[in-house]
Length: 582
Image 1 (tube, rainbow, N blue to C red):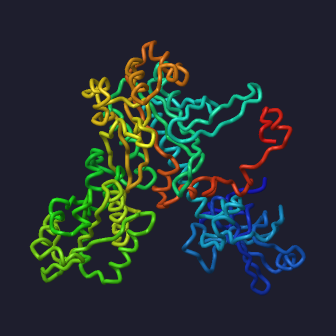
Image 2: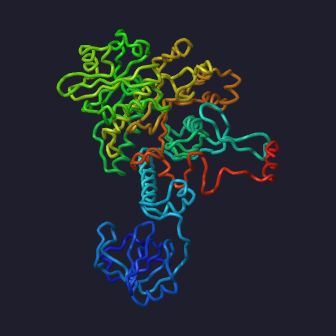
Image 3: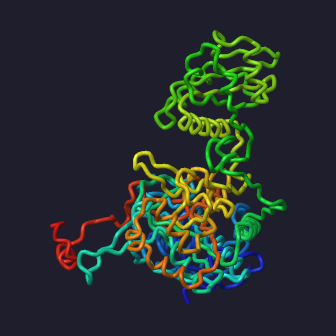
């Protein structure tokens, strides 16, 4: 038996007991004839005391950081207790030790405030995973996983696996493709989502399905994206939108209660997509703070200021209590909105001074009365600062959304320990892709229109008015899940494919299996998928999902530990009939 206890469980009640521990050496501290060692495993750290005889033995068997060590000894009370760790009241007086394995000096320190950079730690991820912070993240991930499974099991959902090797249907993000050796020149695709399979399960009568499942998208990466990611994928039959929202709001509340000890007594607020775009400039608003966008066009135009007069949109926000911003701070904000990522040419401001006077960067064009109109529209009070952007509508609204978030960050409104969830509903069913000169599905081609707008599917000129029976759940300005009520009638699904520019032949080739299934009594159904990695990162207070994935890829989609992707040898290429890659 390598150990009788873990390094995290011993307490004063174990005093005088003989124990055996095994783990990794965190630190070695010699003080004359005695040596203290911190021994670490997944469960915690226990201090070891090696007396004079064993201390002499260390001269012949030197210990280093990350050596694997087994010790036998007795639990004793520490004289210098450590209140920062659960085992801090006790130590082990060691009677014998065995070095189970030695270790090279690690390339970075295995502790919370490590000296290793991101790339170095990802290259040696198996060492990084030993750090307490990373261990806590993976523990949280496991606990969320377990909490979700317990909840869904209690509501009658079945966990059913779906295939990883499927057919490529290049719509939306790019597929990862896998060549088939037994079928030369043919390829599988890795699933971006189990979407069609879960719909087929509804046709099959498995009315409550879920899966915590790997999905794959060959797309450009950022902090909250990975080429492979995990979804909490769910589907239900004989439901409408209200059933879905009620069920998965309950699941979210259950997870928050179990993982964070946070109780939401009220229902999550709901906001239409149109209101989200109007007041926040994006469809995943952060509602931890107000600072809503205000359309100032009617007041701004017609005063001889060319920038306002020619702008499609003039929009402002009220930064409460910021009228004392200095010229340097305002110049900094101006440079911030001029960055390529934001793309604006400048920033206009109106200071509503504490004495009630108003001062702006456009005083030449607006008198005191004109500036007061801006203040009234923005609900500004003395001491506030109004920030205004003007230009092309889409770009300007997006830029103001980003500026709002930046101001929220600077003013301390975006506290990661405060959680404000909401549902965004009533998305457009279609959006027009100018470069392709056709309508595309905003969500995916299996999303149903609102029931009261079904008749508009027969009139292409009305496509832009149709609302989707779709919904997103948003947390602190991040979408953590999205779904819809699905199309379940063959004729409506064919109309949707036609609206997206798909011929009957193409629709049959790509989705004939689904259209065929709809001819055999498909029930009304709908579902949702949560971004599991993203949900965990928000619960853990992090901005990057990499921190909550055991073996993540870097921003180039590479696994620097395995050095993947990599070339394969010529024998494999020949077997796969990929001779063009020679």
